[in-house]
Image 1 (cartoon, rainbow, N blue to C red):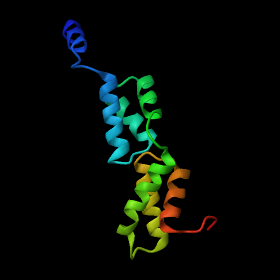
Image 2: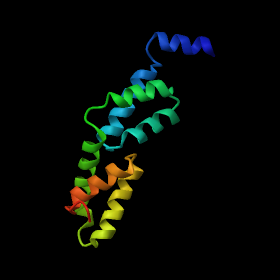
Image 3: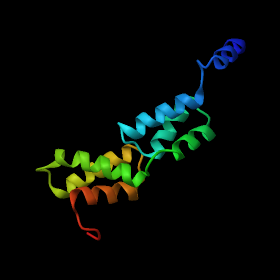
Length: 118
């Protein structure tokens, strides 16, 4: 079995780094997931922790930017929802996508145009 894997790696058919970069690109790009979720997904796919962390750190932009983009893209779906429920739903979505609570709440406040400190 090891011989087969070695041969596949040699011809480029098994490349953990290429897989990890493609996986992260898709998750950061179209799904707008946070670093934590991407790293967890990579580790669940069998990628070594060190490689998962390295690939996640190489992502363009940062979690604040991606969280803000996702929040802005979803805020229109919450029209007609009371502000406190809209905030709870949006910040919860962001946390499920792998953003920390502070980043999620901040992005939700900005997208919903809720003044900070309320």
